[in-house]
Structure formats: structure tokens, C-alpha cells
Length: 394
Image (cartoon, rainbow, N blue to C red; front, side, top):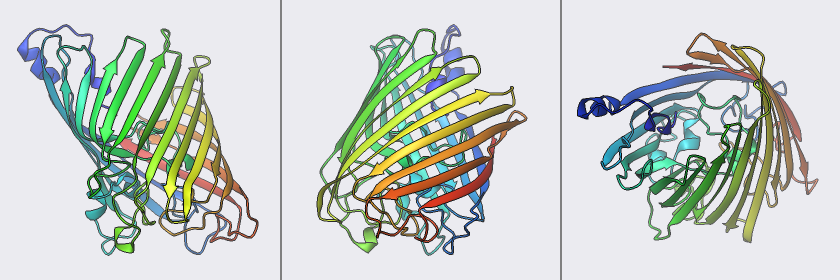
């Protein structure tokens, strides 16, 4: 649902009237709701470090997502101005929140699980002296991470554990600059990782480059970023984590590096590989740095125009137990290796609805066998989940 899909048009320009028609705002969104069955029936009703569909054996309105988008019109010799605003409400919204803004809208006293966030709020300027280049001012999605977190864009209902270690949004300035028809770049300067504002004077950066083959069967991207995780001290009243949860947020500096490869093997078969590596100064555990990384491989096969099958395998490593944990229930986090396998389907129900059933198996190998396991209230080192959601786009 990125505004980039609207930016380039092959239709000829027939003057100001046609230009204004192309600049009409687009309003849309989707609703995603689902259920996750955990046969272990944890007493706290949490699925451990599994994010988004983290509630066990109960209905979740995951995302009520709305956006309005008026992209900047690209026309040589002319200056174009556009904007975009996104809003999400539901049990997933806590992941999209940024410190100093979204986290203050809906208090925990009002709702424990249902939050509100504005993941994107920006103005976009098209540069007349650089065709197809644009500058965004405001809040925009982080380039780190292969899957977007948007239910209408991603294949699976659940998400890899890499989502626990990568930021979602930045607030600042972002320059998108295509080098040619195959290579695009972006450079950003921002307030930090999931930070809207704060007292710190430190700023962060993000940059990325994407190459697409001429036949469009292969795409390779490399991204990196660094910045403060938050501007708060490690106090209960200033709680939160990289993804917007209730865990403590000390004033730390995070460095993230990631990339992905997509390859269309055949007309029906597609493969994707993704990696994320993060390093953060960790004051909570008196460690100079804490590190985590994750590798994910996915394959997708189109059985028909209406049914697509997918499989995803992830290997994640948390060296110090500081990244991979259950966000909203203080689930135990043990240093070690985490692995998960997800098998799922996308069943298209008409033009605007997709049913996404899946089965998922998580397991962990703890560095310290005396540490609490991650699943079933800290009583098991593995977990089975059976889940499905329905996404309706409007």
C-alpha cells in the first residue's frame, strides 16, 4: 500500500486538468481479525515471544487500518507536493507506536490490548531537477525488515521473531533517489528507532539500496540504520521497547543491518531470503552491547488464481536475552537460539478478502538450561500454534 505504486504513470500528460486528476487523494484501508489456538492453553493466555497474534485462544481485532494518500506528481520541470497519513487501531497497534506520540494516546487504564497508532504522517515533495526523486518530511516506515507488518501486504498471519528486534517507524527526512531503472536508493535522517520526540539531541540515520533485474525476476536489497532507541530513562513511567511495548526503554543506541533477496523461480514459484543483525548498548543488564540476528527463508507457490501456499523457516539468535521476549506479558527471555517453521495458505475470497490459515511450530535452545523457557508460562521450550485471520480490503 506504499505511495510508490501511484507515483509513476505511463499515461500521457494532457495539461493541468489531467495533473490535478492524478493528484486526487486515495482513501483506503483494511480490517484484519483472527484467532490463534494454542493447544498448551497457557494460563496468562500469551503465545510467548510470538508477536502480533500473541494472544492465545481468543479473538483479536488485529488491524483496523486507514490511510489517505496524495502522492507528489513527478513531472520534469515542475515541483510536486503530496502527503500521506496512516492510522491503525487494534491489538497490533502497539507494535507501530513511537515514543513521545502514539504511546500517549490510549492509556493502559483504558485498554490493555487495543491501542491506536499513526505509523505514517508525512509531506512528500517531488524534485523538478531529479526525475522520480522525492523527499519525505515527517514520520515514515523504517526500511529495516523484509515483511512490512501490514496485514494486506504480508502472506502470513504471524510474523518472524525478527519483528521483535527491528524498528517500525522513524520521524525525520527521507530522500528517495533512483539511480536508474534498476537501482533505487534512499537516505534518511531521523530522531531514532520508533521515536517521535524526546529530550535527547542525538539523531539517527537510515540508508538502503535496491536492485531489480531487467526481467524483474530478481530483487536484492541492503539496508542499515542507527539511532537512539528512546529518549527515556529506564523508569516504569517511561516504559516501552523497540516495537512499542511495555518493557523498559533505557536510552540506548541501536545499530541495525539487514537485507533480502527475492527470486521468481517459475511462473508459480517464488523464493525469498532475509537477514537482520542488530546491536544495542544495553544498560539494563550492565552489558556494553547486546546482539541479536535472524535469518529467514520463505517459498510461495500459486496453486491457482485463488489459492497460494507458503512456507517460512526462521533461525534467530539472541546472545544476551535482551531482544526476543514476550512484549506485553514480561515473558521470560533467555539467551539462546530460537527457531520456527510456519506453513500457511492464502485463500482469496472474491476481490477484496483473503483468508490466511496457518500452522506454526516454535522451539528454543537455551544457553543456560536453568533459565526459564519462553513458552507456556515459562514451562516449555517449544510451542504449536494453529491460527487464521480474515483480511478485508476497502
